[in-house]
Length: 382
Image (cartoon, rainbow, N blue to C red; front, side, top):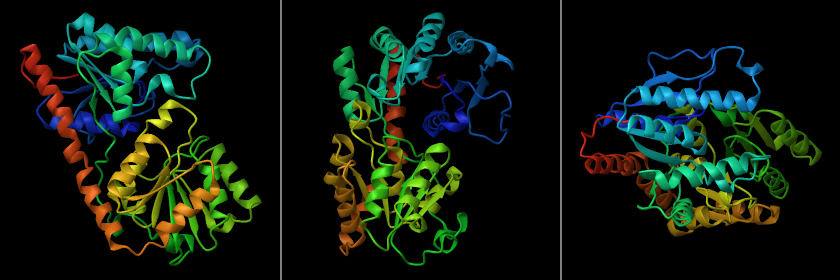
């Protein structure tokens, strides 16, 4: 597997690599950890090989550094003599293609997002990403996507020989346990007040400011941003103070993955409000949506195709316009006032069905098919 950052910070790669290793595959993740990051001997059950340039790399011009690291990733991957090269995200497509050609391995492209449809890439990078996909995706032996909509886009755009396999970002985390997390209500001093949760990083385009304006219309409700840090979190704190709701807005940093659901379960409703700023947002199924369900929370999501279809089909929450505070407040209010036991039952049923235990079967089946097509044993992938 090829990854353009440290595997310690990518739970999707950890889940997939661990699932393949547990199924008997020999898995090596070639990644780019910081030089100071120590390898954890008690870490996950797959090999990790760093390809990071030594100290002083920051003195190189960025294009030179990125190109050199890409070459190191490709060389180290090919040196493992793999049966398959699993390239995570568009940044790893060209190194993956090079390593696959050099080693004779199969190429698997794992698209964590609609790479050509994100709003944050600037300068020449959109053209670089588009060019990498045009060159490499049609040559891939298999493509993986995180939602049906992204899978359809990739299939249509690159005329894939076989449909992309959809492997959603379903959590593989310890279930909620009061012993794993502090009593948030006591620490926040909110008692039994309704608690709304926004989990994960805060950033523009994620409906955070709309959520603050919605809270201003909901006297008595409390809002927790769990995973909020950096300048944008400070901005949210200032906006809350300006709106007179600072006492009801709580900003906390990230927590360890093994304790996450134990924190999540203490809220009453989870929120995911990606804004309609790009095609990637329209087709996304955010991680937090499935984490809320795993913790037993109903959800409010943006009125965008993929997320809204999931929520409506399963009856597990409400949909709202992420640009309209009134729409968000109405959706949250209807859930907080919900007395239908059927809602909780639907959330529990969805959590059981939308689990990594079930989802990983798609990944294992894909590798079995690749091995059969190659006429090779199905116990080696890198």
